[in-house]
Length: 107
Image (cartoon, rainbow, N blue to C red; front, side):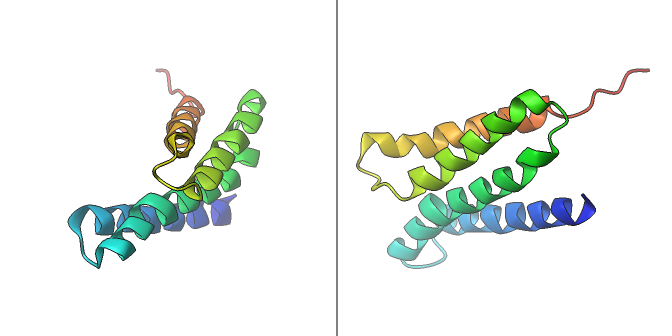
């Protein structure tokens, strides 16, 4: 469990670096586009895939796998295709599932 969290953390940080590189135009336009519109979503999708088996609410496991799939598959569609927006849908679904899986602390 601990190793899985470390891998997810590293993937998330690298994904955010890819996104930042695209936003701040650190590289050529082609590389920035690749990093922020493809590699970012692939890394986030892998992170969601790794997180899915460890969700405490087992009803969310398949949803998280679906979100991971949408992120990864959507990253390979050309940006001009309307269906390429499924990667953003996958990202939002994965974030919602991640936050709804957090334990609540009551005092």
